[in-house]
Length: 384
Image (cartoon, rainbow, N blue to C red; front, side, top):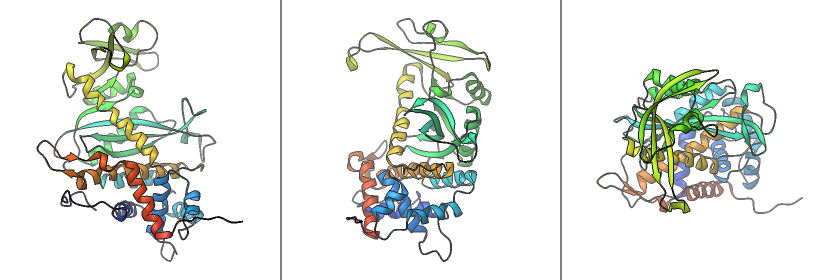
C-alpha cells in the first residue's frame, strides 16, 4: 500500500486483517523470506516475525503459541539463508522498507530531523568479532550493548523513522552521521534543522557539522562542579554568546551557545530559576523559542520506547537477527503513525485532526496478533 494512495474518508474502518496486510506487504516487498518449493511461503515467515514483534516475545515462544504456523527453527533457517548473511545488505533493505511508507509531501519542504542512539543491553560474547558490541555506561547489569542510530522526521502527527544504521564499536559519531546523511540525500529530503541529544556533544561532531554548514540544536553538557560551560549558567535573562569547547584528544571548537532562563513558578513542585544551554548553528527558531523547539525532540525518545514495545526478543548472538528485529519494530511504529494519519483523521485547516486516542499502539499490536491467530489458530493447551 503506497503512501500516494487517495486518502480514505473518516468513516473508514481499520480492522485486524487490514493492518496485517499492510505490514506483510511492506515486509515481503523488501525481504526475501522463503525459497521456491518451501512448504511455508513468505507471508508465513512474515506472520511469525510480526507475531513475535507484536507480543514482544521470541520466535520460539511465538511458534509455540500458534497451532499451524511454521516452527521457529524453520523461520530462523529461512532468515539465515535469505536475509542474515550480509548485515550491510540487510541494513539497506530495512531502510528501503522504512522509507517505502513515508508520509507524502516530506520532499516538498525542508524538514526537522532528529538523530538518536539507542543501546540495547547485551549479555554475552560477540558472534563474529568484538566490533559488533559497543561499550557504554552500565545499564541492566552490563556495559556491553548492540547500538543503533536512527534518523527521524519531526512533523506534527507525521513522526516516522527514515533510516536506521548499525553502530559498531569502532564507528565514530561522525561516521554514523555521514551514513545517515547519505540516506537522507537518497530520499531527496532537505534538512531544515538537525536535533541531536547530548551524546553527540563532542568537539569532533560539532566541528564536523559546522564544516558541513548543517543547522543544528543540541543541549550542552556541563561537566564538573564549576568552570567550563557552567560559567554560562548565570543571570536572569536568556542570552547568546560564543563558547569554545576544548578536548585533550579532539582539539577545540568554537560555536554559538544559547542560554535560556526559565522560571519554574511552582510547576512540577519546583521553584526558582532553571538554565538550559544549547549549542546551535543557524537554528530554526529564535532564542525565546529554542527551549520549546528542542522539546519536540522528546517525542523522538518516546519513539524508542514505542519501538521496544513492538520488538521481538532473542538470546541469539547474531547481530543481523537483532538488527532485523529492530527494523521490523520501527516499521510497525511507522505503520501505526501512517494508519492514524490516513484513516483515522479529519481534514481541517492547518493540518489533519488525528484521533490518537482511538488507536494507541497497543491496540494495533493487538490487532496484528489476533489476525495471525485467526490464520494459524491459538494453542490453548499443553501436555506431556
